[in-house]
Length: 597
Image 1: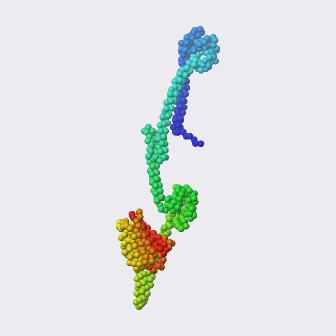
Image 2: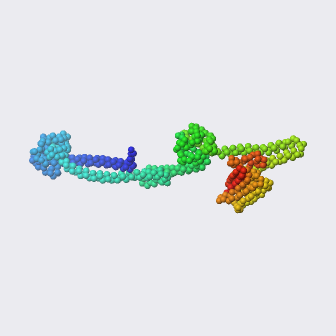
Image 3: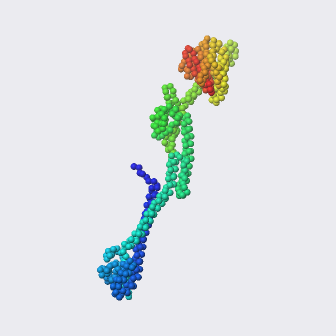
């Protein structure tokens, strides 16, 4: 059950009101008691004075035993002074009273005020009077003659006269009390409001601050207390500092998010409960995860690769980084190689709370490494063959200087042929290296000119070789297409394609060069009528030193680099090269170049 809490105002205001009410009530009660005591005391003094004034007169009358005169005198003086006067003999007998006939009154010797006056010289009592049947205040003093008590002078007044006077005082005091209560209530309300107002202002600003409004500031009036002003200034300083720190945190978070999102490496953070804390877009892409917002989901429900799952579980148990290569089979033909590295995740207390796994897709690197090894092996093999021949036949000529001229000429021709082959391999390698380097640094010079120039030059340079085999080269160019390209490189690519077509075409055939302009591309196709290429070789046809028929290629003088050069020339123009082939029907090599670079 939720407790409904009171506001500070409703805690302060009733408290102030109760304290002031009790204080005022106490003061009023003390005042009323003081008024009553003072009034009674004044009345007692008044009765005493009156008694002392009348005592000599009645002393003379008592000594003369003129009791009738005493009654008359008491009647007269009592009525004039609105005071009851009673003259009592030492025996307690009443000899004079202005309120009742003394003959009918009881003996007053045992009355408290009479006893006190007899013993102590004066007596005062407030009591119920049986004679008049009312409450009265009585004062008595002895009447002395020759140091002897000859009688008692008693003056009295009814209490109702005192009470009537006191009630008038009580009414005025009570009226003032209620007026003060009303004033006090308003004063307490104002005081509580003035104390709570700064806190209310600070509360409102704190709520705005909690909602993210860091521009709000506490504005207090000059009437507020010093403590409130200091509290408001401290709050404003906190808001400024908090705003600055949150801006720093947000900037750092945005920077981290930008770095995290732009990383090409996949990143997964996993807590000690094997739940995913964070994952970046690269990880989604590399691991082919289709689900979104997988933070907080168990690792086993997302990662189904056994090796990666085992690596993460192993890393969670380690306090040191872990590194491992992992193979992911996306389908039956393609596999992905990942280099995964993990490091412990620490909380603010430097305690391990999980692990962070960063993995790179090194499939291409592995492929490049394999290609590099194959390339080095192929280069070594391709260079070793002519070098071995040159070295062997040259050593023979040196060892046998008297060798017959016919054999000498034969060996020299072999050395010359292999040296030309060696030169061709080296030139093609240098050409390939130059194209790759210029493509990487974007230094290929592109000129806006007609493609017909490069095609015509290539055909011209390959025409004699084609005629020797009775091969006719036909150019189908419907229009003169002008676009940005490097004419010498395109010429080199077409020459390489024509040379391949001439080598592997049958005699008495045709080679067609067709130029087609599409919306965004220009397609240059070289079609021959040769033996065709088996389908299993098409995907690797543009690799360095790759040959479909190695024996025939060497026999025809091929280096295995021509089509690789064509591929890199196409890439230099941000284009591509494709091949379609049918056995015993021929092949079509297509160079696809973008019209706009």
